[in-house]
Length: 174
Image 1: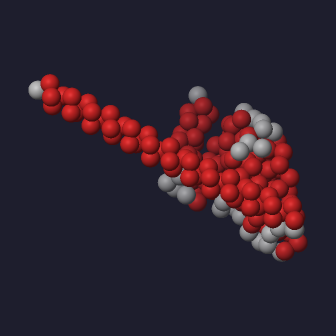
Image 2 (image 1 turned 90 degrees about the horizontal axis):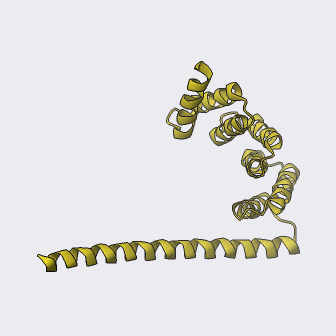
Image 3 (image 1 turned 45 degrees about the horizontal axis):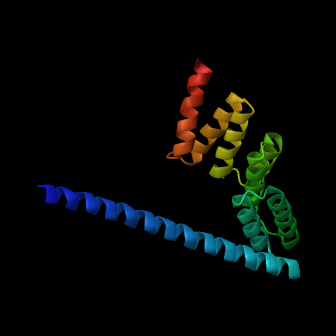
């Protein structure tokens, strides 16, 4: 019996170590890929003018790394390049810029960017959720609820919008 118990403990320990090892390796590969993209894009964009996609990718990387000042500059360059190239699908760029402002607690600027994204693509559910969240942070409960309900019109199974709308409905009706 003691022998079986030791084997079970050892098996559980080995399984936990294996899980931790796989998790660490995945994170290492993800970080290496991110750093490789960062290096490649920085090098290319310092030597020549980039495309909308390249500016957007680099801005997203800086945003993920929380280097917000660089991200803002690159999102703005992406918008400018998109206007020059006649690119029509730029709502994700405005949404990304809004996210950067939101992360810095500049909610009014974030709201402006999310609205710009929605002006270009009214059914952009991510921007609707983000706008709702920004309104919540500004304590504009009715507007936040309206945005989450709008998101649910386009995506009825949207977990975030469902949960936040339920919560806000309780606040509004209380």
